[in-house]
Structure formats: structure tokens, C-alpha cells
Image 1 (tube, rainbow, N blue to C red):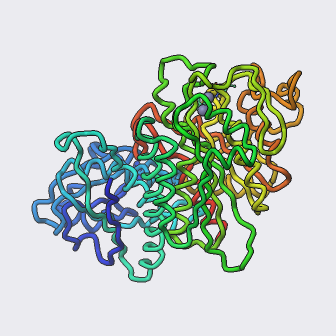
Image 2 (cartoon, rainbow, N blue to C red; image 1 turned 90 degrees about the horizontal axis):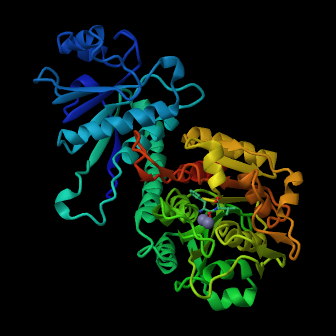
Image 3 (tube, rainbow, N blue to C red; image 1 turned 90 degrees about the vertical axis):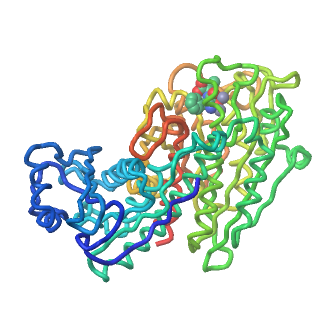
Length: 503
Ligand code: BES
Ligand code: ZN
Ligand code: ZN
């Protein structure tokens, strides 16, 4: 998908000649405090009529579009509801923009203007609001058309202008737009990678995508092939890859924008299983196609490296992707097999479908060589996460209160919220094995927790956070700026964390 161009403009909404002028409106309010008051006068009170008749009330997700018949320079006016003023969050604006963009697209216009709102959600600045509006608009227009023939592929908008009334606002707003474009283009990249089917998005293709990312300034790449993994002793990753004809990859990217030489890096590790059949512990057929997105974590790490480079963030960031396909081939791992991990610990594989924690254990052990200032892994790790949290929260675990708090805050800003779960040692008894140092499943209760606890045995003592995105990575229905299918949720959280950390 081509990313819509977004730019700031200075001027008055009632003088702007655009195909569609978008105005946001808070629920249940008259025109007094709203951006649309001067325009209503020029339109002869038709907005007031709409509000009084309650044809449009400004509810979240609500919008109304009509032609202006030359009464103002804009050809059409689109009112976008925000919900009640007291409930406004950055996400109210993302959602309003997501709906607005879909409506504008139906008009066949290819560009539009949105008036920058006079109200900013509590706790945030115009910069963050401009970022959120940009995100909602770009992500609301997302379509995956790679495999559709020309005529069934949808239209795309070329340009959105964000109109500010005072020149003094334009710097903050344009910086917000710059960030919003970066986080959105990263999310689009992730959605695309996840939408491609597993016969295309193989471990080798992931390695090629990483090569493309490494063309960005200051991004270095190293790819370990099977031979080197054997030499290093990555028995867990190799074990998962055994059942597939696709060779595994171990991808390491480094972006260095640090001001200090030898700054300790932030390290992201992403689960990259290009398809998870479950292996010999085969999954049921129903919905198995979702497992083409079991590489979401790795895709998000790749996309955040690219975004950090494009935003030229002043930090050092390492991205690690253990990449494999989990298949039940003739040489596949079998329940009861024991693998030796890179860290030296042995694991009894009682269920080959618990493969994510295996490949991550080698990824996390490898991360130790960088002495991370912060280590964050992100993974579509457990079905238990879906059961516990539904679709609206990412599961968070961690060893460091400060890092957890930073991630929590960045998630709130990004509208990709995390919810902390316990990482208590008591649960470790569920991971005991009779024949190895530990086993890879934890029995009936607390499936999301035992998976996280398994990972914790491979992170040494650096500040670490684990994010389980199995809950959010796939949406059953289309929402304002989230499509049906792969969502890319987690990408903006990771990048927001990097932005917040660099400030
Ligand atoms: N990739 C799955 C987890 C998953 C489930 C992601 C649903 C997205 C949606 C993971 O590899 C898996 O299969 N986990 C097993 C672990 C179990 C065998 C201990 C699970 O959750 O069932
Ligand atoms: Zn699995
Ligand atoms: Zn999996």
C-alpha cells in the first residue's frame, strides 16, 4: 500500500478550498465551543439543524457528510464524532480519523483537509494529538491488495492536510505528523508481512526483508545460517526447525544512532514462526490459517528498527529474530525429545506446539552478549493469553519495575495497552521435568504465566519485559483503524517506547 502523504497547512477552515473538509465534534454539544461555529454561519445554520434534530450528535464512530454548494470553498463537509468531551483520549481521535478516511474514500476525492481540533486530550500536547490523528488516518485506510486483481483492489487517498489556525502551532503539529507517519508506515509494513501467506513469507523471505531494512542509514545486519547455529549450539531453535524443509534463519539487526560511543543498547527479540502447524503436536484444522501471523513479533521488531532509523532516534537498538517454520515433517521433533539450548540448559519438549518459547530462549540467550540496558521480547506466545485478556490488552511480564512502567505509559500513549501479569517463582514447579532441566509446557493452569516464566530463565539479570501479543495480533472484525486479520498491534507501542526513551 502506498502511504498517504500528510502535511500541515496554516489557515482558516472556512477559507480552505478542499475536496472534503473534516471537522471533529464532541458529543451532545452545541456549536458554541466547537470548531464548526464560523462555518455554520456561512452555511446558513445547517449544522445547527443537524445537531438540533439529532441526526448527528457527535457520538464516537458517528459521522455525516454533505455538499456545501459553494457556500464555503470546501466542496464537502464531513463531521466526525469524538464522543463525550470528558472521555476524550488520543484514541478517540485515532478512531474518528479512521472512520473519516473510510468515508472520504467513498466520495472518490483523493485528498482532504482536517481542521486541527481546539481540544487536546488531558495529559497530552498538540504534538501527540497530531501524531494520533495521522495514525488513525493512515491506518484506517489500510488495505492488503497484493493478491487481488487490479479491478477489485480498492482506491487509495493521496493526501491529507492538517489545518492549524496559527503559525505558532505548525512546528509541533508537523513533528507529530512526522512521528505518526513513521509509526503508521511501520504498522503497515507489519500488517503486510503478516498478511502474506506462509508459502511466500518463508524464513528465507524474512531474511530478505531484513536485508531491505538494512539499506537504511546506520542499520547493520548479520544473518546466521543453520551451520553457524549448530556451531553455536542453538539446539532449541534448530529443534523447532527440524520438521520443515525451510531452513531456519537467525537475524540480527543493529541501528546505532547513539550520541555516546559504546552506549548500552535496547534489545528487541521477536518470535518469528512463519507458520505454526503445532508440529507433531498438530493443531486442529479450524482457524489454523491464522498461524501464518505467528511471525508478528519478529515483523514488529524489524519494523521498529526501520522506524528508529527513519526517525533518526538518538539511541542504539538491536533487533533479534529467531526465524523458523514449525512443521510435522519426518525429521520433526517428537514429544519427549530433549534439546540443549544456547544457554546450556536442557529442555524436555513435551509439546511441539509450545515452540515459541523454544526459539525465544535461544534469542534471549544470544541477546545477553550485548549487555542490554533494556531487553524486550514480543511474541504471539500463548492461546492462554487470548483466553485471559480477550482482544484489547497485551500481556506484560517483567523483572524491572521502571521498564514495566515505561512500557505501560508508552502503551497508553500508543493506544496499544498492556496489562501486567504475575511472574512469580511459585509457578516454576509446573515446568519441572523428570529428565531435563525443565519442560516446555506448564500443565493446565496459568498457561500465559508459565510460558513467561520459561523465558525468564534465559534473560540473565538485565531489565527485561515480555509482551504476549497472541491476544491482539489478529482481529475478527474490522474496526475504525484496525482491519480484519493481522493488526500489527505492538508495533506502535515498541516505537513509542523508543521515542519516549529518547526524550
Ligand atoms: N502460536 C501459538 C499461540 C497462539 C495461539 C497465538 C492463538 C495466536 C493465537 C503458540 O505457539 C502455541 O501453540 N501455544 C500453545 C502452547 C501450549 C501447547 C502449552 C497454546 O497456547 O496452546
Ligand atoms: Zn505453537
Ligand atoms: Zn506459535
